[in-house]
Length: 144
Image 1: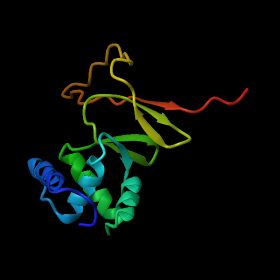
Image 2: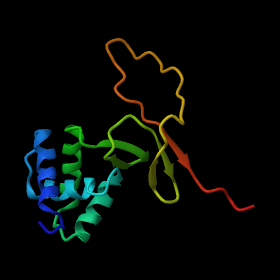
Image 3: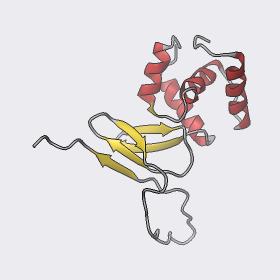
């Protein structure tokens, strides 16, 4: 593994992957370390791929996508859509909402308690609401 990490960090990554039923392969460990090594983050597959390349990890973009989908299925990350085709993966899987800064392509958490959704609609028969994702799109005001 090319990324710099301590023995404790490596154990934590291995434990995290095993706890959700994923085998800790070299590539999963490297990507997990990059995703979770700096606190809560919002990353696209392209962002994570670039970070992996910069860290000296040889992983293809397809491998990054596959790994992120495995992390999503295992409940390690939460996918967020903001720009049509682009999906961000949030390492904070708690219920919360986001600002999306259009010019920067950046996703930012909305502080807890600052958004009131009121009453949610009743789901169709046989369905239940699993999560509500609110993305508030922002752009800088034009200079007057």
